[in-house]
Image (tube, rainbow, N blue to C red; front, side, top):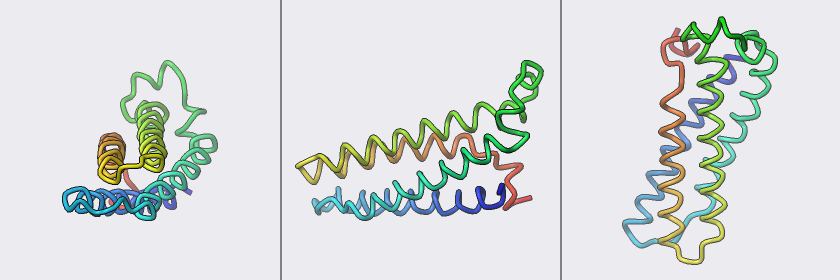
Length: 138
């Protein structure tokens, strides 16, 4: 399950980068908001969230590892607290951005909303990926 979660993370990162590039081109070129492109990042984020929640509640590194002793260990703290919390906040930002852009009537404003919220979500996600222990690099 961890390998699947790591593999889908690559898909999510690529999807968010593609969404941001296409949306930036649309924003700078005064082109209409492309909801299908934003939906790509939205769906990828929620699939990753679902896999992450399953892993969090079933893995010994997730919720079962929650203890005062593990708070002193930076790697344990990353897995059971920092990583899940930042990923959840990042996906919440992506969801808010997608919902706000969908309701926007001005295409420029919709593109700007996607750029801000998806960009912040991507930064939070990138900030707490355990790169050194990632199964794709190990």
